[in-house]
Length: 538
Image (cartoon, rainbow, N blue to C red; front, side, top):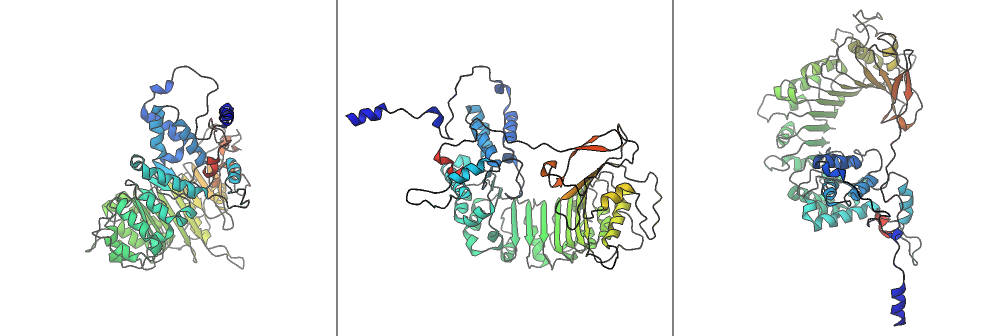
């Protein structure tokens, strides 16, 4: 009995050795009134959504496109700790944890340095083991959870997975989505969109188990699957569709699009056969869907006449809010026709390389009362022998449209001309139709605030230049030129994809720039220290 006596006499594990899944013991009991009981359930859910923002991401963007500021894994950990406080918090926090699930490869904070060293598989017999594939283990644990609890599986609306994980774990991904009946979006391997044999089982699970899917893509190799859509009643609630590299007839395109009555976001990419006949309103084919967002890329046979024919339909004209044109047959000189035919257009993007200067004949300026965002990215090959770039004439046309007060709602403008902010803000626009005389317009210059983002052909980031013509404290006149951050070498803390700042008037007609403060990731009660081997997959 001596051995048993020694075992009984051993001290228990100290409180500080609790694992990350155990609630740390309180050093002092705090008694008081719980003010959160006064909060309604929607308010409590809103607070928890601020703790973990990605749990309310209802977009159909991939894991790489939908990244938020901070560390998503730490945010999810903090929300999980909130679920352990009390039953009332548990109900709301769990609903968010399993609403829009995100599996990330790494922590985007200093914690990743510590965990990376702990994930290495080392033992007495194998001192050089390979590190654990953390996202794969996270996917397997999530798969086990939803397969064991159908109630939790029914909560999941979207599942985002890193690229390498979804490409290397097709079987586990198929087993996971097979129990998610309400799934609307999931990151899928690229081969599934091309009907590759290795993704056949996964696509079959999507067809049978996920009828409420809202996003799908068909690429070169899946022409047969797209042609079989009419009458199949497959994914009738689809909202976002991408077609890329397909070799099909316009009639098959129109019949396939008619299978999705709720379609609102359509992308047509790399379709060399696509021409204006696909947008014809009259005829025996089903009508072209009235989408809110239309994207055309690498479609050289689509012209402004075809899109104007599409917008002649009252349903299409009332629905279209965003139009993106990249390497199409739509000339920048014909944009005024499309803007006039789309009265509810909020966003317009044209990315075009030109080889000839802007036409010299009389062309009306671009005008829109609803447009708020304009991407006008016109480029041309570098000119030699001292000749000016042909793209400059297109930006002259843009300036003439801006100073003619034709865009009263425009707030953000993106251009691929490094000198555009100085041309716009320092001098009135030159005359549009021949000659170098300046336009004679009443109240020349911009009449509304405008954020100009410019970038040269050899630059990677957008340069931000704000313009506020309104008079006020610290402004001399309505044409005060703010300080431009063009060519400034500023850090990423100035915000977003562009080097942006907060502008404060300096009292002399200019502005002082104050960089945005970096958001610090809040630490939960568990802190950053990990004492358990279970953190190998954290």
